[in-house]
Amino acid sequence: MRVLTITFLSMSLGMLGACDNSSKSGALIGAGGGALAGQAIGGNTKGTLIGAGVGALGGYLVGNEMDKKRQQEQAAARANSPVYNQQQQQRNLQAENERLRAEIENERLRRELEAERDN
Image (cartoon, rainbow, N blue to C red; front, side, top):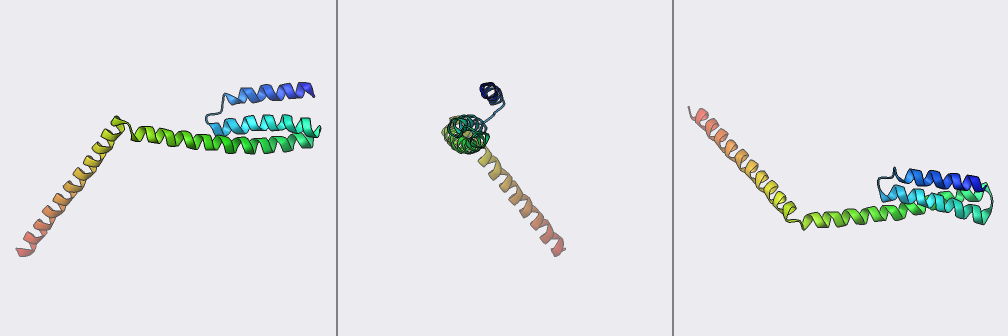
């Protein structure tokens, strides 16, 4: 049993390197911790599997909340960045410029149609 536990922990630590966000890492850590707790409490395979499942779910939920918080903090930092604000203003000006060009072109076409109708 000890060899199985050490093997499982080694594999779990190896897989942590492949996790690209807190949700995945949390699920993996939770599954490992839950499996160990399930084995210690239940002393059988059923307890280990239940512990792994509950731990994975709990770890995922905690990691997911951490990811959400990090995204909110990054969005707030971007919104307060002078570069971001300048880029946003530039996009707004470009959109207004395109709207005005389209309005001028529509007015030109309207005049041409009126001129053709009058002839």
